[in-house]
Length: 461
Image (cartoon, rainbow, N blue to C red; front, top):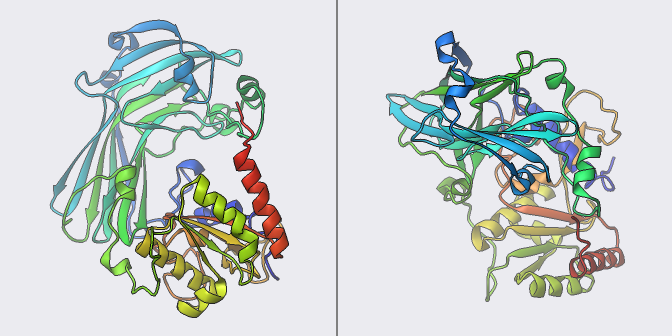
């Protein structure tokens, strides 16, 4: 059956299904990198813990202070709480989560150590909680799950992984700890009191806080990802582990040993913007049929049916004046006649890929339902679902396919996003939006409402 009216409502469902097929379920969804597992590697965890490594809490107390830390807690989605802070200098010369790497033959060895970090004791919702923060790290903010520091890095790889091993050494135990759970984000469209909203929606995952499941399960989460035509080993390290049955947190130093089939040619740890700025690989580039504009290169491309130009003129002018974009228009008819592909959706994706490579375009708006602008049908699993959205062939329509410029059909069986599509690219390089309408009049009215909202935004708290 046609998947026209469901495209926007099930985009998240499609992504979650694909993530389940291509990820290890031991780490919370918000930290799962949407990339395949490593089929040829195994994880061996060895943990060393002795009483001599567990140090009394008071010996590390260097500073204690009372203050009203509204700004600090606002960063973690809680405001207006009185806190008491303790700083722990486990390594006096280092702060936060630190990484050191080296190459040993065909192995990369990564040492993860924890230096200074802070424990904030918080009174919230009638109970006492703790919030651990550390420099050089991110904080897990999944709704209802313990907020803990972690660090994520990417290592360029040129050969297949052979072995993967993590060694843990507990260097500190924090007693009587109950980590503050992540807050539910307040939608910007809601004009509500943030503190009241958080109190109303306060939630602790019962599997962790009541049933005593250690969190997170693993100290290191690994993935092989494809980005910009390159392969990377993605590592998310968690040196802090909450043990609810003991009401404590283990602080651990980690040694990650990654073995390859051949000697790594180089060693680099990339984080955040460094990955986004990684150059496009030569084999990912394709011969272009795209004609660049005579003026500035387009930052925004609108793909709309032939004859709908008048309907989007006001929106196009608004984007050019409000955002300062140069806007380009293309029709599916023009695209499918100029680009190759197994189906219309793949031809549209090749055009988007070409626009990104040639003009650096990162924003694309698809105007029209799936019968006007093609959508790709992607794998949705074999088991029956109760959602009622599955097509007859067990697939779901997804525009997320367009955001990731690499292949989603790596084994060329014309099934997109299946578990056996090893190394498929699920890291988005561009951003895609769609206005799923049937007529030019509907498109004009929908775009007019967007312009009106951007001219007169409804502000949240």
